[in-house]
Each structure stands twice: as C-alpha cells, then as structure tokens.
Amino acid sequence: MSKTLWITASPTCVGKSYLHNQRKDIVSKLTNIDSFDNIIDVNTTEELTSILSKDDKTFLLHLEISLIEVGSWCRDHKYHPLWNEYLKESKIQKKVLILGLNYSDYIDRLKLRRRLDYHNISKDDIVKIYETFINDLEKLNIEYKLVESKDNYRTLSKTEFFKLIKDE
Image (cartoon, rainbow, N blue to C red; front, side, top):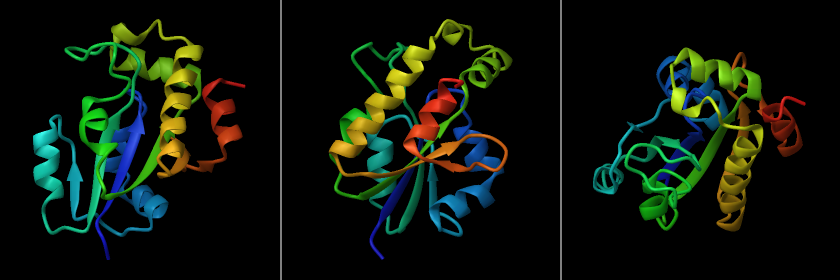
C-alpha cells in the first residue's frame, strides 16, 4: 500500500475539526479506512513534510480553504499556504473530502463561533471559494468527494453540492 493523504477541506467553521475528532465513524465510511496512522493539524510546510516523511501509510489533514485575508495570510493566498507551498506539488497520493453547508447554516455557525470577521461573507464568495478549489483539484486530477457537513454526512453530486451551498 502506498502512502495516501486524505485532506478534509472547507472554509472555516464548516466542521473539519468536529468530523476528525468526533465522527471518526463517518470519516471511516467516506474514506474506506478504518483508522488513520496519522491525523495532521499543522500550520507550516516543515511540520507537514516531517510528518509525511514517516513510514505511516495513511494520513488525514485538516485544510482551510478561503479567499479571505486571515491573520497574517495575504489576499494572494487562495488557500492555506500549505496548499500553495507543498501539497499541490507533492507526489504523495491525495484524495479530498470537501465539506459544505447551506449558506444560512454556515452563517449561523460563524455567529455561534463568534467569527465576526466572516459575517459579511456573501453566497457568491462562498461559491467562488468552492469553485476555485474544485477546479484546481480537477486540473491536478486529484480525486474528491463532496460531502454535506451535518447529520449523516451524505455524499453529493456537484450539482447537489452547489445547490446546497447556495440555499437553493
């Protein structure tokens, strides 16, 4: 078995951490992996490179995608710098779970977590974040699944996913 890096990706507050920490049963169902050798939540390329150099075979990474300036990131970063600096070019096999919510639930979660910096994010911004990321994955031939981030975490078609995030 070669190394496989599963990436759980979404904007902030969609449920990546909850899925990794509280719903391992769902992660297992979506990835067909009973348990991961290494669950990664890092912020630097050096940390990630070190972890991926281990002899482990399965990895699960938490990746925030955003088009919004966050902390020290500059607006030129479409995604977490890890994606731009390392993951995109890495030869390790990558598969992605893209989590999404309907727009109104997303705004509720932002308010609940007091992410005031995001309250004014529009539906168009959210759609652009997802479209850009999915297009990049398709150009790189990286396999992905679109998943509703609540209840039974159902897998969606692209059409269903975009209807969901647009509240249609």
